[in-house]
Structures are given as structure tokens and as C-alpha cells.
Image: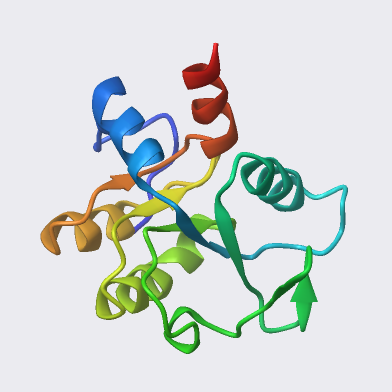
Length: 145
């Protein structure tokens, strides 16, 4: 069952671990990346690409986003993924996290406003770092200042 932001029963890694995750990650599979420039996922992807990250779109409704081939799911990517960055409702994330675990990704990142107790449990039990309700763009900008 998903938790509301008010009843927080999980904890993100500390600032040093968040910094390590950001700096060590180079390939990001972005779930729910939109081709619409006005969408937060598109803005975050463009920013991360400008910072030198490889962003792989995962959106079954798109063929290409921001010049990159879009994949229907994580398993179709066929290369090592450091972080799966998820832009989907909290209740939609557990199957994505399960697929990420099966694909042996390095970690899970649920964007700001997205929380799933089940996803947190799944990732933690698999030994994967998971961050929830936190924006990768904002955290990266903190490192630059």
C-alpha cells in the first residue's frame, strides 16, 4: 500500500550517499519521459543530458524523445543502467521496480511527489538504493553550488 507524504515510514539516504549516487551514475533510464517540453520529466531529462548523463527514454507511446530511442520497458534496453528515474504515480511504481531489480540496475529514483512504500520495500530487500519524493535535477544543482 502506498504511503501519503504525511505518514512517512521510509527514509532517503543521507546527503553524502545522494551525492555518491549522482556522481557515480552515468546512464539513467527515465520511466515516463514525455516528449512534451512543458512536462517536468522532459525538463529534468534535458538538464541531465546537458550535464553529460546518458538519458534513455522509457515510454511505450514514443519512438524517440530528445534524440534518443524510446523503449517500451527497462528489459528492452539491453545495456547497463545506473539509475531508473521514475515519473509515474506511486501506485504504478512497484512493477517498474520489480523489472528494474530483474534487469540488475544500480538504483531507483522516484521523482519529487512520488512515494511508494511497496517500491521502497522491494528495492531495499534487493539491496538497491532507492530515493523517493526527491528531484534529481534539484539534487544535482545542489552539488554545483
